[in-house]
Image (cartoon, rainbow, N blue to C red):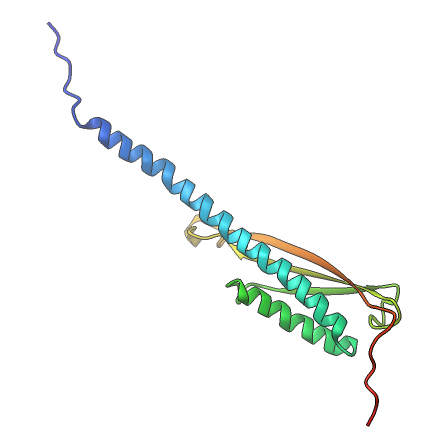
Length: 149
């Protein structure tokens, strides 16, 4: 007559370990997706705001300064104030003077977010996810010009 081994209590331990092994990666995936989505919202808002600020500026030099400032602010509004930021502005058909005639201003914002909960010990620094957004703003033919006093 063979005795069956006593297995009382092992199911709960197996369930806890299996739950932890499946839950930890799932939590990391969900948190990472939320971080990327937050970055996506920030980069999209930054491109839109930078395009508007550049188009409403009196000239190209001040337009670039305003575009970079509002892009930084849009990222900060999403909690990404320390994220890297690259602002690229192009114009057609007047590449040297974006505020001339009926130019079309295109603003491209590039940034990246750091994926959370992964230590540097895994090698190569913290993993990042690159983000970019583009916004196009037409400059109208008729513009308001302030009269000299």
